[in-house]
Structure formats: C-alpha cells, structure tokens
Length: 307
Ligand SMILES: [Zn+2]
Image (spheres, rainbow, N blue to C red):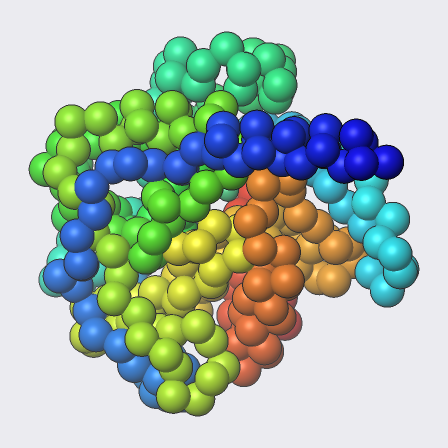
C-alpha cells in the first residue's frame, strides 16, 4: 500500500515537473478599452449596430472530444468525433477599419504543429485548410487582432499577418500550466515568433456579478470583450453590435452547437478548471438570453440564431 502510494506520488511529481506553460511570449497591459458593467453593455447593445461582421471558415477539422449526457451522475464521459471547423472573424468598423477576432490558419499549418500534435490529432487526415489567412485578407492588414485564447488553432494565422499588428488576449493566458501543454505550446510559440508583446485585456470585476468582467473595446459600444475563463485562464468571448444584429463569439468556452444548446456536456483533457468553464458557459448563456436575436458562434461549429 505504502509502496503504491509512493509510486503514485513519484508519478505526480514527475508529471508536475514536466508541466509546461502555454506560452512564454512577453505580455503587457493592453492599451485599448475600459471596463463597463454587464448592464451598461446590454443597454449599449439596444442601439443599432455599426460593424460589418463576417465569419471566415479557415479549415474543416474532425477530432475526438469528451462529451457526457447532461444530468447523469457520475458523468458518463465518452470520446466522440466532433465535426468541427476553424474560424476567424472579420469585423469592419466605421472608423477603425478591419479588426479580426482570432487569426485563422496559414496554408502550411501542419509544419508548425510538431510530430506529436500531428500524430495525436491525425492532422494530415483530419484538418483540411479551406482558406488561409493570407488568401482571406489579400493585401489588407487589420488594425488589431482580438484573440479568444492562445491555442494554436486560434492564433497560428498570425504567421500570415505583419508583425507590427497588435494582438490582444485575456490576462494570464500564456501562464497556464499543464503537462500536456509541452506538446501544443511549441505551435503557439511559432505563431508568435518575432512579434512584440501580447496586450492583455485589463478586466475588472463586473459590479453586477453577471460576468467575470467586460471591456468596451473602442469606447463606442460596438465591440465588447468578456472575460470567459475556464478553457484557459485568459479565455475571452466577444460581443459585436453588427449591422445584421448582435453576434456573440464564444471562443472555446464552448466548442460545439450541442454544447451550447445543453444537449451535451463537453470538455477537453487540458481544461485547467472545468467548474469555472461551466460557470462561464452558464454566464454566457444568461447573457445571450438577455440579447434578443443574438447570433451565437461556438468555437468550432456553426449555430446561427439562438433565439
Ligand atoms: Zn482551445
């Protein structure tokens, strides 16, 4: 018994010694936006929208996801294939010009992933690039990129963007540690290679306690960053008041349409904080319920109008 305990302890130490950060790229406090309350944001969203919103499908991607049946205790986790896609979003602001949410992917994505990721995800057979970021943007460079988080499938398209374009991300996203990150962190490092420091959103507590913090990105009620921790510590969702209605981009706070609808409970192996991830999802769903006609975009599937 003692021997088994010591062996288990040794294994835990060995794994924690191997824990790696998601990113060691330098980060500074972001220079955009100011905190507002969730209620102030919801009031601003009653005004007509001004942003042209476009979802770009960067790639088709099928991978194995952990799903459980809602309400079953203990949860009946099962691996199921998720028929997903990789997206980014082009936002055209009337005075700020082109702004991106996430980056899409470069045409030569597999070469940045490393052998372990390529094999574990069987990338060469499961990921099909549809439109590289370079092809999607042509010669146009965005003024800024608003990242949902630093996983490679959201940030690798930065390879196709001029290095001086600032990248905004939630606080502490790179500081996340997990032993599995040893294998995916190199792709994030290659995505950010040669760029200046990341700019971290300066969230503060929501006075209404309805979210983990909201920032009015340009101070004009057009785009809001919402702290959505759990999948990663800095995970950020975005709300865009667009010409065709209000859009909620969740990032990987939820991956799938079924996850958003509550038909499946989802997670992935290295979600560092599952209870927080589910709390965030509940907050985003309550937020969506308060925005008539909101169009919800889960991280890797299309949902369309939720209500
Ligand atoms: Zn992710």
